Image (cartoon, rainbow, N blue to C red; front, side):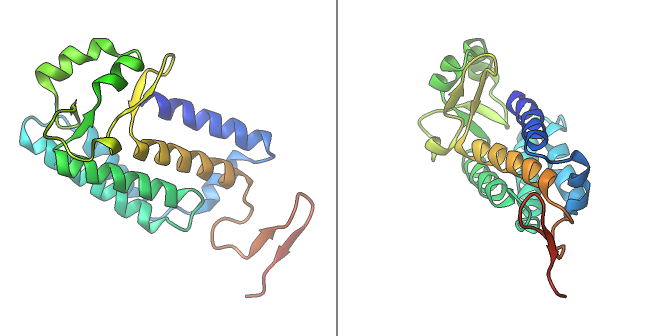
Length: 191
């Protein structure tokens, strides 16, 4: 979550630095926004037991559908691939395995005990029965971020970054006939 909070403002700053405007993001016309919102909301619903695993898988299923419907938008192919990788790992393992080494190297040694005792549906300490662990939360991001992430997470963050930066620079929105040739020339394609 901390990396998300770093990615979004950094992308906005990069968009501004390259001549973009935040107001252009509203023109991008995201498809199925409520499906994406429902997918995120399912991740924070406090449900005990096996139902929480089902909700997590459903959450990623909804997020994959929303990303697929937006695949023509800047960055969404990376978002889609990242979500699909996370969906695969979570589905096969009943939650996202987290490598002990990634926790220690990211400065989160204190969370090891909690994951050993009460690893939940969303995250659990990677064990010998987990599969595709190479695609799990194995990448440590040290302080000040202090987060273990998966390759899928990195693709999602990169796609979101690109969506924001490119979206801030884009004129006319997705599907528009307006094309930006350079900083001075705008042409419209014939219908």
